[in-house]
Structures are given as structure tokens and as C-alpha cells.
Length: 102
Image (cartoon, rainbow, N blue to C red; front, side):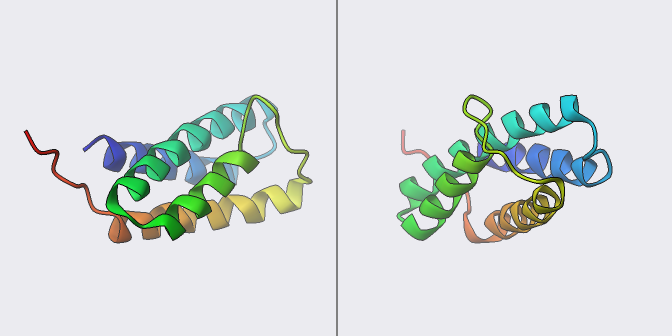
């Protein structure tokens, strides 16, 4: 349940980011949201044995890392926002929640 909620929060932040991308404060907040959501998806992908998805989201988490930010031009950041949004949308279908055995 947590990965699904985290993905939807990240998708919402990315959609808002397409319209408020000029705000530097929002950009930093969006980087933190995408970074944390990316790590959650990485854990979900590794648990499911889908390592290709894990590598892809490690890459996204690295690019959106708020601690050591990568300098990205504004236009490239918009494209990266769309790519990231698409990746999170596809991960909703490709990575289903695995029940935790009791």
C-alpha cells in the first residue's frame, strides 16, 4: 500500500511541477519527493525481482537527489519531469504490491 500511495503522491507532484517549474522552492521540494518515491520503488522492484526497474529508479533517484543536486538546465528538467512522470505511471502497472507473509 505504501509504494502505491508514494507513487501517486509523486505523480501529483510531477504534474504540478510541469506548471510551476520556474519556482526554485518547488523544484527542491519536488526533488525530495521524487528521490524518496524513487527509493521506495527501488525497494519494491528488488523485492519483486524486477531488477531492470530497480536500476531505472536508482538512476532517477540519483538525478533528483536533493543532497547533491545535479545541475540541469530548465528545458532538460522539464523533459526529465515528463520522463519521470511516465516511469512512475508505468511502474503502477508493472510493479504490484507483494503481500508480506506473516
